[in-house]
Image 1 (cartoon, rainbow, N blue to C red):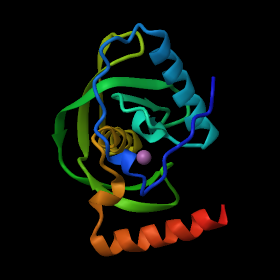
Image 2 (cartoon, rainbow, N blue to C red; image 1 turned 135 degrees about the vertical axis):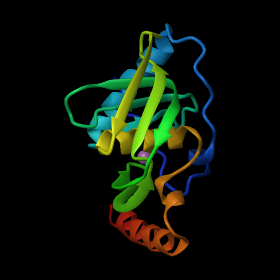
Image 3 (cartoon, rainbow, N blue to C red; image 1 turned 180 degrees about the vertical axis):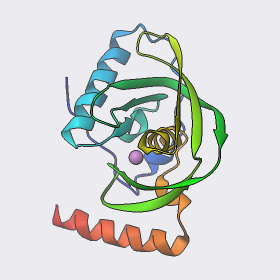
Image 4 (cartoon, rainbow, N blue to C red; image 1 turned 90 degrees about the vertical axis):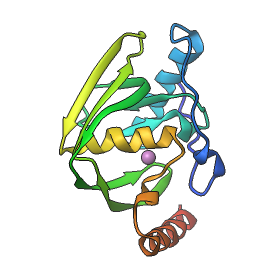
Length: 166
Ligand code: NI
């Protein structure tokens, strides 16, 4: 397993749309998933999208409560309702976080790492926010796109200051 390099904002490759995975039973894909977990744990993230390591395939890994490894391939939100606010951070925007408005409830359809279809749903908790945040990445969207322009400017300024110190 290898810790991969994470793309940081404002890298334009974070804006690239990910392609669906056609063949999951593939050594390269399985290796990629292992590397994504390794990278996510190394930087203490709750989730990671392949986009963030410059691989533009629809793959997400998550471990929102540090107890179960979740892999979502070709994920799709099939149900959404309500609204809720969550404090979110992102490994691609080190050192900052912001409150983001999201759907309160989501149901997501995806394939697991063996290519088996499954559904996962969540209401009003960190998992619900995490699912929306990571699926956004696959579409080239970042959580800062969901906050006001003023807030965004402040966040980016703060992040750049922090990154200079790293
Ligand atoms: Ni993120």
